[in-house]
Length: 422
Image (cartoon, rainbow, N blue to C red; front, side, top):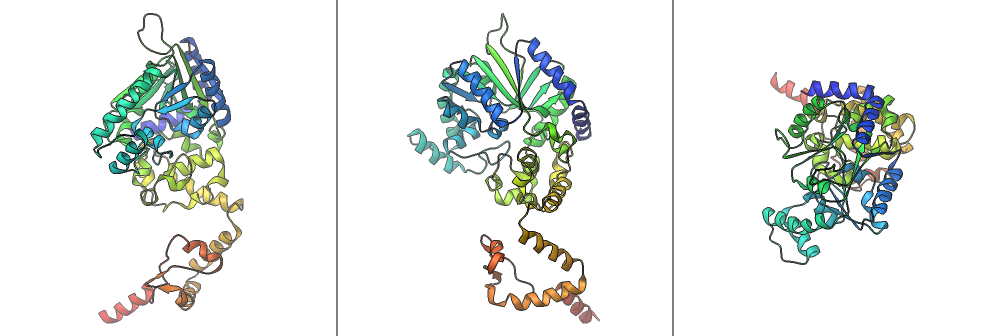
């Protein structure tokens, strides 16, 4: 199934213009409107203009990393439109004034106790630290928002070119409320999310749920085909799809092309030893984790990931977990090479690593460096660790301790053990 998904993605990217044209034609045939946004600024302006024409004062939102990417909530608030996140995790972090720390579980960094304290503070009521009670409170708070909202905003997991169908995959059902109750529905989708046919969609629905949450199929799979038609009891009067570029199209022939196949399942985050230690917020951008480094480089340029390109052990766990077999470690190595070739990294870092490369590839220099290091480190070793280094080396120890050079190298210990064995 992973091989099939990979093949479908690659074939789609090879004819992306054709599939997008077909998608646009079918959506417009169904009475919807399609807008192309070259960058985040254009996407924000398009959505705000739609909301303004609709006279919207409140917007309900289903979980969407694309709207996080374009900072849509802030843009709506500047126009006097109140955005309300209706996914439970997104609702929690909106109350906390934070950003998502995981692609599919935005509030994974919070305990139930922290959520209870947050609800108590923001909703002004005593709250028990029980997940079921917390969910009931959020549901009661949000129900009225669905009825009051003038516009519903969602992302899109996929869009089917042959039918003009926008597909939302959720586990809470809020996506259906957002797409059926407000008068206007706006979906913001990366241009690479199009799939050719419903048959292709079935492959991705199965593999996405397994990779993201371990389910056979997500609880709610919602297929949206334009605005409400005559005789239908629910659905919006207007439907708009915003196709977001922001550097995606340029990567069709670029070094990060494989990243366009990403399903946003979060599997690579779940297995990454770096992400599991530092959490999503440490990445400093919308998309965290191994794939987040590549997506950030795609959207904001290599300069934005000059440090993040090294935030990987290159263990390959992310590539093993990826449902479409994206070779993330390979692209991270290419990013590191680009950072060096374009001299984006600070000169001190470049010189340090060049010297280190020389030492590591010359056994005589390596053994000499170990001996010199043992001597030079003596003033800085405290309780079995180096907690502070002088000059520019201090950047390494400002937030971490370093292990000291061992009193004896492995080779020295091995030689001693062999002598004893004789």
